[in-house]
Length: 112
Length: 110
Image 1 (cartoon, rainbow over the protein chains, first blue to last red):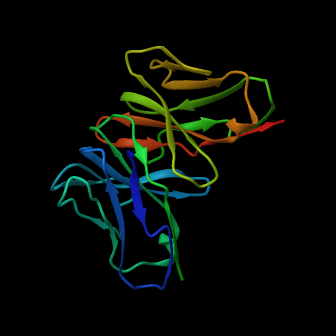
Image 2: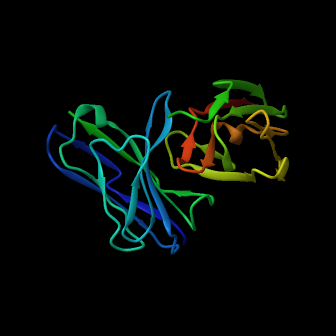
């Protein structure tokens, strides 16, 4: 089944404790992206990647890191999480830039 | 930056009625896409309209695009209770990639 998977689905952590949210797609898509969703603000793009080893900042990259060492994986790293990073995070992939995106189920992160 | 802006923010209609949502944006775009989200779940792609297209249909969905006004509309005909969800427009624009609006929350009452 074609899909985007994210893990974990739910995470509660404390300020400053490094964490990684994994994202994987099985559709051989070139383009992958991370978003955060906050009430009233819609989805805001954090980082995106057009292909392996190519990443770029979205609208809200501060406090986040990403890497794209393999085509299928695009992990999101929070090196020192803060409470303002409490949010619902989505990973998405598409065949190429500008194509329709396929979204993962989301990761609800709470930073206390 | 917030580019796509949906209007209205919330919409409540009866089953069988049509629902119309609007989206405005600010820059030149490659295409505009509409997505649907059920209660905090992942977004599902509905329809994509390219900048050189004016209208597109998919089942009960009709999307229009007016690049001169930088606006788009999504029409859902003969709404069903199962259409209850949040609807987002997303612009795929040169240089900024995907920009989503805050969404329209649609409630279809049985």
